[in-house]
Each structure stands twice: as structure tokens, then as C-alpha cells.
Length: 255
Image (cartoon, rainbow, N blue to C red; front, side, top):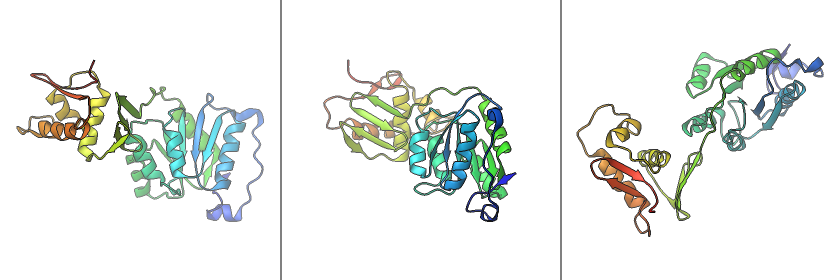
């Protein structure tokens, strides 16, 4: 039995019968799943089926709301539509992946062309199911995602002293004041924050921030550190970015 949703040709002409899952039909362990779908009928169908099967299913219809919930890291899998109000599914997923959120994502969408599927998978999707769909196939695909090893908790915010970074919102503040950073400066600061209190070498920065596996023989690192220090430390009572001569750099609060 295929389900197409209220916006599909199938959904327009076929009335779905009432869901009945005898004994729960549990094919895998209990999972907590976030359904991000703007079609109310499709979402209700999925949520009812998952709940009847013994799983915990939350639903939001707006992409921005979905992004906020998905960053909590408390879900075992996401069922994600491509076309969403507020923030489309593709950019939602790209934002999650850029922030280090690795929760498995199953795209569920009417956009079933080869290019669409490739685009979704390249954006960080783990699987792709097109509408109309069979609920049994949706369950089977979620089952496959659920058998993967559990993921470590995802950190999307960092703080050292009064310096704060939010990876999802792409915002940096010092003492409550917003700091405007260029993309490379943001990535550099993120790496320093992830390694706060530890000395990172010039080679480590070249490899992790610029993805250079050779020495470009330029002062690219020193120049960006100087610019970042000017934005982060200038006009404050405490420097956070320190140069360790002969070793590298460290981001830490003064003891």
C-alpha cells in the first residue's frame, strides 16, 4: 500500500484506510524520531504509524523549528522533507552537518529524480525515499539507520570566559556583543575553541582550517591569527588568544 500525501496525485485520489498495527509491528528497538514535514496528512500518517509501533515520534512542519529540535542531539533519526517553509530541507541538513550534528537523516520527498537524490545524499543525507511510499519500506529504512552504532553527543556551542560561539546560528559574541567574522576566521576560532586550553601548532591549523597538507611558505596563519585577535581581544580586559613561542597558539582564559 502506497501513501502519497495530500499534495501528490495518489493522495488526491486515494483515501488511506485507518492504520492498524497489530502487536505494534516492532521491527527494531525503540527509537526517538523527528519528522520534519509540512504536509499535515503525511506527517500524521507517519507519526501515528511510528507511535503505534512503540516508537517516540515528534513532528514539526517548519524548517527552522526542525533545525532547532534536531540540534538537541536527542533523536535517533530524522525523517526530512525537501520542500519546507522557513528553511528548506537541503539547507537544514547542510547546516546540521556543518555544525557537526551526525544524526541519521532519511529524506522523504516527492522530488525523486536522480539529480535530486544525489544532491540530497551529497548534502549529508543517509537515505532517500520518494513519495508515494509504502510505510513498510519507511520502517525498513529507519531500521537500517537504527542499527548503526550510537553517536557521541554533539556540541554546537562553545564558551571560554565571556567568549561564546553558536555553530548553528553562526554567531560569535564577546561580553554579550556580537563579533562579525569572515568564514575562514570563524573556522579558525572554532578550531581554537574545540581545542581550548591546548596548544595547536601552525601545521595543525594549516591542515584543519585550510586543509593544506603542505607548507605554503606564507604568513597566512599569522595574518589570520592577528586579524582574529584584533576582533576577539582588542578593547577587553583579558586576552584569550595567546602565542606560545616556538610551539603555536592557545585559546584560554588567564589563570
